[in-house]
Image (cartoon, rainbow, N blue to C red; front, side, top):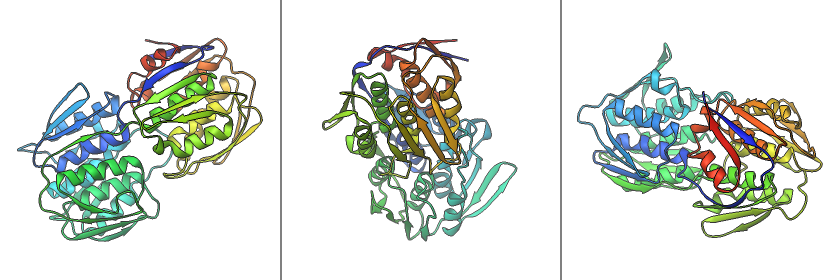
Length: 416
């Protein structure tokens, strides 16, 4: 397996452009299952998760071309309404094909998903919502078996504003008979990107960007073109990397409003933040100080940037308190950060971070996608050499990660 060797001490300076958002591109690809004509998706990142979803769609019989960040998807004349374990085990997001397959073909055979082990991410809300829409669903031998001659509109209240459940039910409702109302829906920018793509396909959706989505089912979805929004998590990762090295980094190609609470918390910690129409610049005018953070669904602080922020706060003066409200295993990165000299203690879903003057290089292991990014970030400011193992996690969500970091001055190499 590949690993990263990071030489600490370099101050990051310069500009970096983010790729298309992983969490949007995957869902647009899933939505194309329902299309009866060719779909074109632009600004698609070349990352492991996209390659997995591409493999899944090809298995189902769709034709795909992916070149120069543009993906063309052609529907199949003889589709397979299934998602096998061999593919699904690689990626948690593969569960979002359940709704599109079921509403388009009337049945679905989907393996229980895999992906990062960052805690329980129950699919109960997906199954409950589809059942309320008239689906007959059973879970046997690690597979979800779903049948519905045609889904029916329903009023669905999500106990939690689950991103995946919102996306799955939103897509399923597009071809259901009648009106579906999803209450307490998630509001992430990637869901808005998906909804706009569905509108172009011919769906009828109101309430986009709010907690209540209303979908009037249609009989036919045609073709659409969509450009994937910039990846806000990747953008936040590079901003935090610039801050932890006490450098100056400009991140381009994203909507700063998507990082509103993150930028607010970085300012509170002592970062200077400048914002343009599609860029953000971070610099450090003085010392960083400890702050409090709680992860929450959007527009709250994103759990996908919590490990990176913990790495940054481990180098800030004073004490920081971080509360993780989304995933119960998100603090697995703490033990690895402490190997680098951080002083972090956890209790249940809280982390207490005592800032230290410096980190020191050591061998560490990426336990999941965002933890891997956090360890690389920590290594950038640590004294000496940090070796990050199991970086296949990082490959799932970051395109050309080491190349982009080297472009702003990082000393990082990939080796087997």
